[in-house]
Length: 274
Image (cartoon, rainbow, N blue to C red; front, side, top):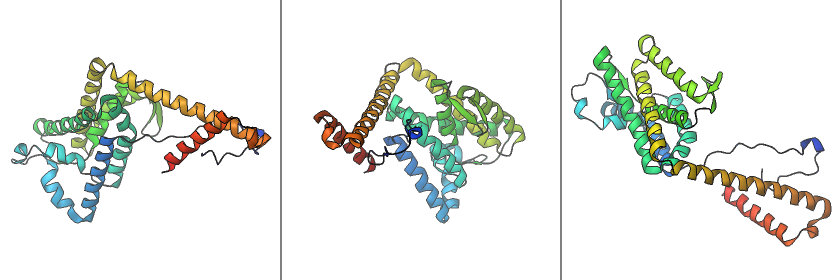
């Protein structure tokens, strides 16, 4: 809600503070990954799916594929349908910026691509040991790696598993791994589930590594983010007080400091809109 949308003539029961949902500020690598995935998906929908997947998807049993190592990266940008890419991009949009900020853009890109590569390797391992034949597309290995990393960094975060069961993120990850393992043997997508497991193990391992090697980075970024939220809340509370004063006593009752506060809030509001 902007400062010009406040209504101080409402009854007292509406005077409580509202909690607003704030979307994450997108980071450079996350933005580039989102654009790349969407562009490739659009090309697939324009009739290029067969050509793209012929040269860039992972396919077990192909004797030439083992020397076409780019497929371990390129398959991550292909998707089998709208819901497939929608779920992956939603998770990337919400979790990616947090991980990119605490690890830096370069480390996050390595993490993201690396989780997908490990997922592709697990897909091939399934072929070698079980004799599974099939194709693999999608960013799910990387996305599941991001979820596992968040489970390591914030294990007590509350989530809804399968949009039904509320539980801690760490518990949800272990439950998901168990589900993927069972699905390899009784499900309809054994190759994809193998890639999910590989991505989650890689993501969790990298997060554990980061805790031991990037200790100074995580608290610093978190402190800066929390300080920004605190400042915004304090400014919003002060603007509420000032506008209530204007409503009761008129604009002439404001001090110079209060007028400067309104000007600052107006500038911030304009920046958010544009």
